[in-house]
Image (cartoon, rainbow, N blue to C red; front, side):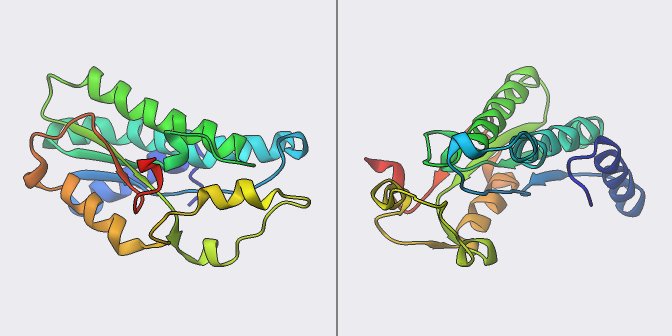
Length: 189
């Protein structure tokens, strides 16, 4: 699926509703991150960061909202700690993830009188196929890159998945408009 396509997102939601008869939760997990010196970021790089990390989640939210409002469902947007602080060599990614946190809060305010709940999870570094293939930009300042590292090391994807599952569950009935940081202490100070 091309998450950057509004039509593809609309079709994906329609297929889910057709197959299952309803939609109870939307978990926006797609992400793309490529570190580059800002002066070397091309228009295409910038557009891809925004398309995957912000536009796609917006398109899915917009398509899913009528069904989620009917079901009293949940949206959980997976942003990043880059969405609540800066991150070196990641201007487009940070801008998009800050935007996703903003989208989460905007939807939470807009639908505060509805049964819908909207929250975000901001993970820190996780062990994924993408992170094991990490490549720093040419002439990178490793002192800056090391600031990204969490004091307790990289997390497992399951650590974040548990938080997402909680937010989408009835146990989180009172949680709306929250931004959960799951980063093994990285943003603690």
